[in-house]
Length: 406
Image 1 (spheres, one colour):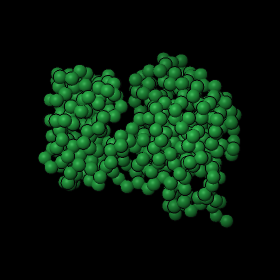
Image 2: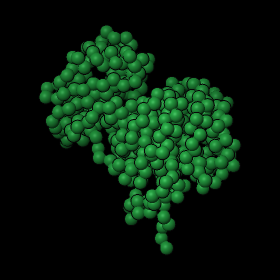
Image 3: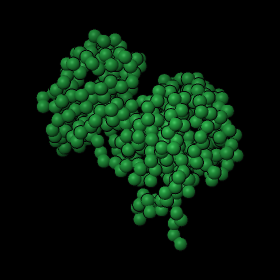
Image 4: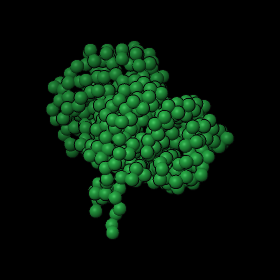
C-alpha cells in the first residue's frame, strides 16, 4: 500500500492544535574557530531550555544524505511532501508569496539584484543586500521599459531587499530551466538551458530569458551596487495536493518573507500578515481558535548563517527565545521547533547537515535533556529521520491515527 494512502486511511479528526515553528537555517556545525560550539549551543535560551526538559529531540534529513536543499524543498519536506516527488521552482513560490496570481502557462523566476564588475563577473550575489526601497525603484525602472518580449507579457514585482520576481505570460511556455546564477562570486552569469532539450516550451523560455537579459542589463548598467541580476527557479506551477485534505487540518501561515508565504499558499494555507516574530506570536494567539495547524516562520537565523556571522546567528536565536513567552501563553497540543535546513556559518550557505528538531506534546516523553542543541538532538529519542515524516509524528502525538492492523 502507498504510505500516504495508509496515513490517510488511519487519520482521525480531532480538536488538537498543532504548531510548526521554523527557524530558517537553524542547524550549524561546531568548529575549532568557535570553540566547538554552534550558535544554538552558544546562545542563551532559557525558554527553549525549559521546553527541552519536557520534550523529545532528534535530527532530520531534509532531502537525502549529502544533498543541500533550497528553501522550497526544505519547507515542502516539513509540510510532509516528499521534495523529490513534488518539485517546485523558486520563482513560483516567490511570485505567489508576493501576491502575483499565476495563470496556467505562466513561467516565474526568482531574481536577485547583484553586483557585476566591468567584465561581467559577479562580485556580490546580493548587491550588498540593498534596501527594499531601492529594489522597488529598480523594478519600477525595468517594468516601465520591458512590458513585452515578442508575444509574451513580462510582469516584474519587487520583493524584500535585493529580491524580486519576473513572470512571463504567453503561449507555449514551459519550465523548468537551469539557473542564470553561478551560485558563487567570481564567475559570470551563466546562460540558461532547458532541463529537457527536446521540450519546445522550455527552448522558447530559454530564448526569452536571454532576450530579457539583453534588454534589462543596459537599463541597470549605471546603477551602484545593483548593476546586474541573477535568476533562479525558472518554472511553471505544478499541481500539489492541498494540506487540509491531506492531513484533515485547517492550516494557517504566519511568515514575513514572500517566499515562505508562497510556499504556504501553494499547499493551501491561509496567509496571516505580521512583520515581526512578536507580531507573529500575537496573531497566533488571536487566531488560535480559527485553525488547527499553524506554520510560523523566522528568517533571521538563515540570514546570519549565509553571511558567516556566528554572533549574529547566536543573537537571532536569543531574540527568538526572548519572544517565545508570548507564544507560550497558549501552548498547542503538539509543538515542533526546527529548521528547514542547516546554514552553517563556516559554509555561508545551505548544507546537507541534518537540522535539529524539538517535539513537545503530552505523549512525546522526555529525553531528559537540559537544552535544545545539535549535540542533544544527536542523542534524542526521535533519532535521525527524513523531514517529510515530521508532520506524521505531529499527527501521531495529537492522537490523530487509528491503530494499524488487528
